[in-house]
Length: 116
Length: 521
Ligand code: SF4
Image (cartoon, rainbow over all chains, first blue to last red; front, side, top):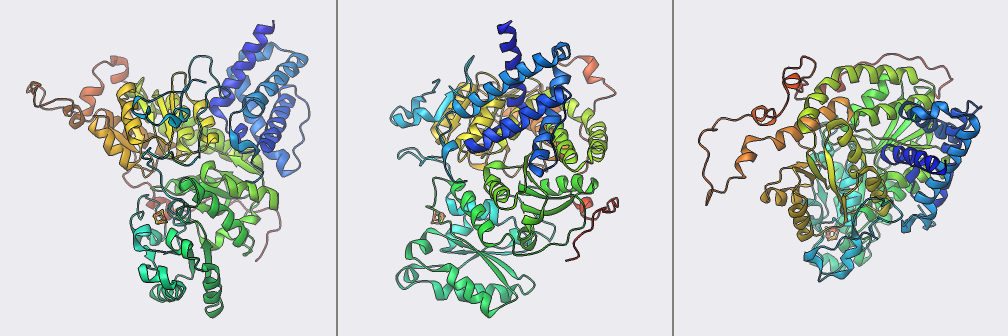
């Protein structure tokens, strides 16, 4: 079960890494906001929950989230068989993995530069 | 860490951490080279200087401006016209280059007077141009000429002109990238917010990090206009100086080359609250998703979808013709900064071409993260390679083609590897749906060129084939293809025109009346 979950998270990570750019902003604080904003909204879309998109910042996260949710649904047929609880768990795993790959485990020495 | 040690660089041990091979199971936390550091003494780098990065990459594509270098003529002359950033005002900014022509005596006695005289002369020589950018070079920076004071003096005497000062001498960073950074920050500090624009649409963007190489910007702006979006400014290809002073009024910054221009987007976000949306203008799927995102942001997704459907129907069969013939070819993707990640995955998806190596001369670790993430296993990633390392990599990887700049490209030819110009393009534009097919056509023509095949024959020892004196690309490329492919009625070679840009300049666009009350400035 755990292996299956891990494997599925890796599939989603692979899609993001090959197709998206939002996860690679230049500073750690921006990456945190991007990962949090976009992946939370993606989870809400997949779970058919309401999504905040009133402010420009929320809207720009939502735009990436809509495209990501569509791509996940199109590519990974196993997603349709998951219930909301399972999707939330999966997306939590994805967020942790993305945070590790792009922030906490990143070897990019510029992430902590205090200026742009 | 899967570092790769080049034999030719064994005498420069520090180089080891600048190259990695993405092995099985490796990810970015274990495979990432160092980047954006000073070039190691002994390693002959192919980088540009920070002045060149500021002026010739970012400053000069601005079209209605006199771009003046304060320094010896060599600084500007030797870096002039290295990129084909065209513009719709008869390429004013490409046709001329200006320098104050500093000599030894100015180093001793100062060159401020000379600078002022040059500024006034240039404005007089081009009386319709009222905007100027001034660039520091090593020489003028080292003697401490106060360029800002001279610019202010001239602006006071000639109130109709406006001058921007870019203080990015050649030594101002490890590479041209230091100059990209400096000019981004200088522009937002000095100029953004100075002009209030006329807003004509409910949907207003800045198109940032786009330099109109062979018309790329005009292709993308055409899509945005078809969607009823006002492109307030382009930073900086085919961009206008005064439009760029009004960047603060856009609703969204659409960012293409994050390497050269993410700084200004980040600052616009902090200072004016404008969100940043990173997009890819290359690749069918990536470009389609990018247009869709911009459409979604403004609630006009249907307009984006209509363009995606129309363009895909028109150009996909032509792309697939090339894909059949390029499948499995190996490429060294060795451009400057952003194309290593813009292209890495898209050329595999749309053309079936495998990236066996990425390199960047001035990219930062963030660019390598994006590039390596988009490559498959086994790819060799090199930061700031020297020429010998590049040669060793080509011998080892045996690519079918290399996408790079003019200098390394000519070197690759000697190893009989055809090259395409990744900076200035061969037969661009390469952006947009049609542009992507033009790129595939150039790749196809390079790999299957009969002349190139001849280069494999060594006249000193090989027998010269006399039976195959007539060859075409198709005769070479179609040998192993199935009849289903060669006789396909669906697939076809590129059928577009030689010049795809001029018609865009005279085009009329659908009228989407604005709903909100717009500024009447
Ligand atoms: S390094 Fe200095 S002297 Fe050389 S081209 Fe650049 S600005 Fe000019």
